[in-house]
Image (cartoon, rainbow, N blue to C red):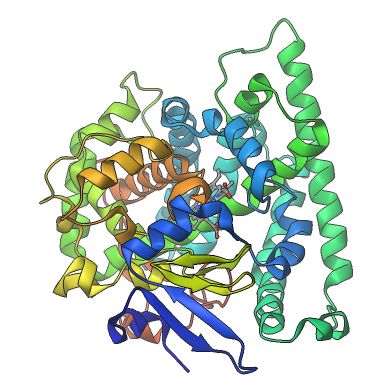
Length: 484
Ligand code: HEM
């Protein structure tokens, strides 16, 4: 067997690591910036997602942009890009702040109650908290639900939350294991592999679609009414206003956003709290910066431009978030299949060749990051010369920037969101969301590990799914720090 984490150290070649699976099928891991640039950007459409992944994920992840290929993908991407561009995301900071503040306020109550009653620090699983709040945010900032409906614990919305809880916490694990297992089996064997969760997943999928349909109809009728707030900037409203999708198509896109945008950011937040719990100095430094620049979550509506303050005046918050996303890439690995006969770094690659791209390995590659590649060190982002702000979704600007960066660290050293036409469309959304959630949490509380045995992260058992969270959650001790 090979360890994905160490694989990039073992090979010095043209960027391709070949290995064989148990049934002797060849797989290739792409490791160098040059090879990655071909697979992800210049030859992006010559590689597709493996059929088996697409078939297994569609019922829950939606038949949307995440799983579309070729011209269909191009059209969907063009249609959706404006809604995800930074200039729109900037307008969502207020909403994201409001939801985060609500969640932090409830957590404050729990923490205070615990300290009053037992005089004990409050211990909770922050990963569950993170999943709940990221679901709230995707609902409000993604789907344009009102903040009040989230506060009111609307029944429909609770149903959805419980469905995701089931799908993600138990069944998804089976689903992904299922995908991986059959990925190493010959194709003829597929129909014989029983998928016992199929029926339950089918029911969940139908409920999800019904909920999305209602959301879209509601939003449409709101937009048509005189009273509508035409300035709303949530992803659904913006997508509706740019047009281009039928109702059924839009349902599939919404499902996609829910799945792609909820657990990923929750995973990043969980690791952020973990690593700050282990590093009290970083935590204090971050808290000082937060308290200097931001009003507390209990202050009523502020007038500051949150996007400007957070994105321009808080270098340490930015650095911590970047380092969390590098070090703990929430999507550790992803797969492609050559759709045509092609080549990578001059090596012929026949159609059908299976390819793995491993953010978790490349983000820790010493040949790209230097000897401290495996050290969590936000300061690495502070010493960099200030780069011009490039919208991560501006693919042309990115390629240009990458050329200018030749000789220094490549864009392809960080694969957290991939790059190119199939990079994460929610990148700006999730970076803003992570910064806001972390600011409200760390501004208010001090975090410490509930159990010192968790200190060695290599000993934490991770969930084997699309995102890499600890199986047993992330228990932390939370103490209220007065004054904010
Ligand atoms: C820290 C949080 C996130 C991480 C690490 C992340 C990571 C990724 C990665 C690695 C991919 C590429 C998957 C592949 O092609 O194999 C991707 C695609 C995608 N992500 Fe994210 N994501 C995050 C948050 C979000 C959010 C918040 C949204 C939506 C609101 C979102 C929506 C999408 C969509 C729609 C795609 C498919 C894009 C396409 O194929 O054109 N993601 N994401």
